[in-house]
Length: 199
Image (tube, rainbow, N blue to C red; front, side, top):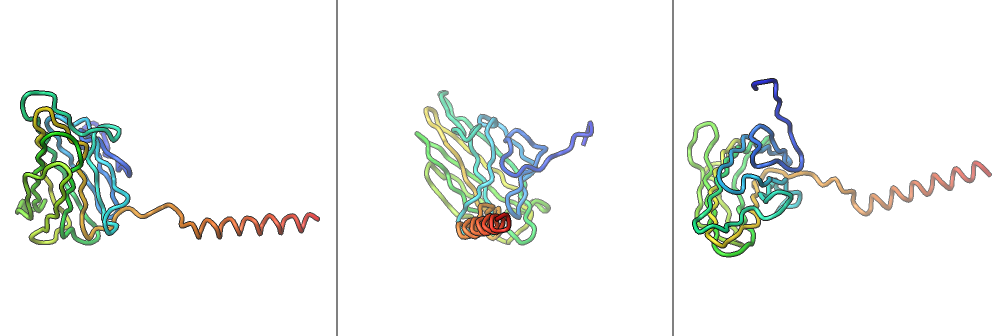
């Protein structure tokens, strides 16, 4: 890269305007983000609990706010492109969930193989509070997604969430309640043993 700039790998979120960084979500990496139109000040978050524990992302406004609010008299568009690499394993399907908001919103999406450019799946016209699953024509571990979001006048969109099926998501780093109990019991035993030795 020019000027010695290095891309960093983030674990929690990435700005939609930052095309040089990558976002790790379990066994998948999001990179090469290209954003145009309104809403490019938003962010992409790693989803830590998804159906089946698969890798996922949520696209929201800055600091988890509304992704896009249209107060103009014409349609506002947000076009978002990014690469998804999965290792190990392949992406067999993509879950698309359009969040809440007001008015009329349309979200379309196309998925192509990153290396060949061949089409793997596409959808259009997904409105507020809708969800769909795009089964890829062939499982792939390196895909390129183009997302086209159109928000009508006097309308808003909170977020868009996406899951990558068959790709393991982030592991849960919160200890199980039983493990916390065992740890506490062990500390208590050490305390009692120390007091007995001191007596």
